[in-house]
Length: 73
Image 1 (cartoon, rainbow, N blue to C red):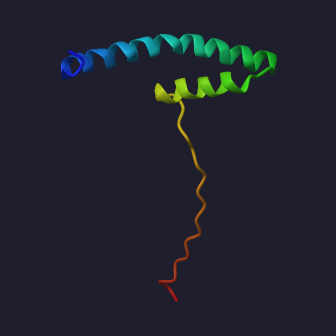
Image 2: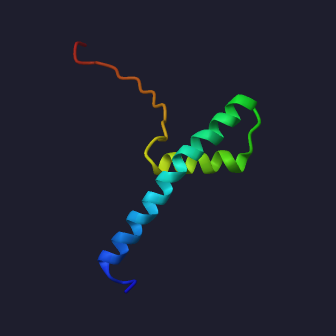
């Protein structure tokens, strides 16, 4: 039964539903950290993972490039 695609899809849907339930709690913990300025590295990492999983946090990289236009020379 565990190898059936429909069963696997169902399990994935249930897992996503459960993780969505953590979102409100995640924001509450994050708010507490912001308000008290007391942070726990493990909690912050967990918050980061939950928010990334929900698509609410993405990695942003700053890329700088210099482009020269030599066509008019």
